[in-house]
Image 1 (cartoon, rainbow, N blue to C red):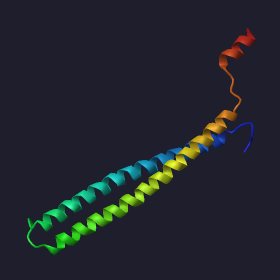
Image 2 (cartoon, rainbow, N blue to C red):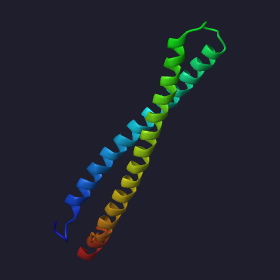
Image 3 (cartoon, one colour):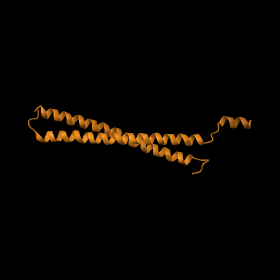
Amino acid sequence: MDEDDPSDEISRIEARLEELAEIAERCRKITLVSKAVIAAGAGLMLVTMLGLLGSNQVAALGSIAAVLGGIVSLGSNVSTLRQTMAAISEAEALRSDLIGRIDLRVVGDEMRKRI
């Protein structure tokens, strides 16, 4: 990498930030679905326990599986989301540092020097 021109590195970081943002959005969606599955499983379990569906062992096992599967999915995606957000913060800090190293010129100053 050329120390005087970090624009290629900044472009790579920005592409990585876009990837990380997509991952974070996917994790948020899966988290929302996981919460819905947990709620549906808990509701089905309550209905089964109250006997509103009769004595249905399949519904009871299905509700338990839905709750447990939802909890596992929720935990996994929350963890992934935290790691992704940390990676986004690190990449943004690195990008800011690289941008700070660039010798920026104000266009108006150059025009004034010519006049």
